[in-house]
Amino acid sequence: MPYGAFCNLPEYGNMEAFLHISEIAPRWIKNIHEFISEGQRHVVKVVHVDTEKNQVDVSIKRVNDEEKKRKLELVQNEKRGAKLLELSLSTAKVKLTPEKARQEIESQYEDVFSCFKAASLEGEPALKKLDLPKMLKAKIAEIAKKNIKKPVVEVDTTASLVCFGENGVEDIKKVLSAGRDVTINYLGAPNYKISLTASDYKTGEKKLQKALEEIKALAQKNNCEFSYESR
Image 1: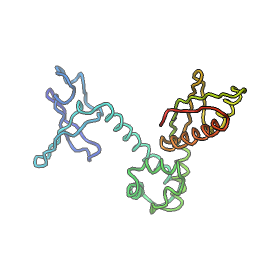
Image 2 (image 1 turned 90 degrees about the vertical axis):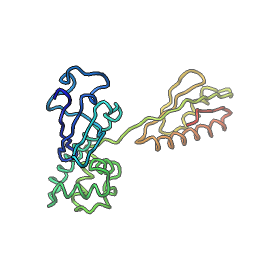
Image 3 (image 1 turned 180 degrees about the vertical axis):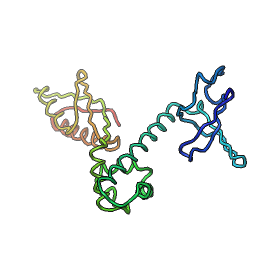
């Protein structure tokens, strides 16, 4: 309509909501059709609910980029979780409806996709609290590992290493080799970038800290000075 649009909210049983023209963009709009058209899907924010009139007002302009990104990711994950669950049920050949399986999963997890993410990392132990057939749990774990890649993050720090012995270069190589599972890049004497990858930042920080302490201990034994930026 010239003054706004009537929308359906799929997450709430296609409840009708109204999007006023003033809530579409942060500037004045001459022609509403330049911004929205029938059949489009948008991320909106509910800004007002009138329970007596059963009226819901929504806004596009009040949704920031980060909120929009998170919501779109959530919707995509919900779709992916539903497909993975359907595949698990069909291959497990158990007499359980997708709706019943979803309800049980959501009693323990925020959503179905979160369950599959946990199963991809931990395997069947992540599903032990779920009241689901054993065969289905096995299939969920199997399909999760095949279809969901483990998240990878990189943590790093800048370090300085100076050795005072006669075999300075060899001592430096020896000391730096003490850092297990890390990648070391030369930045120009005496600085180095020390990094590693892990499934999450907390784990990565712990592993990197341990590697730094191992390098520091060997540096002290070989008449070297080692320091790094604190995490």
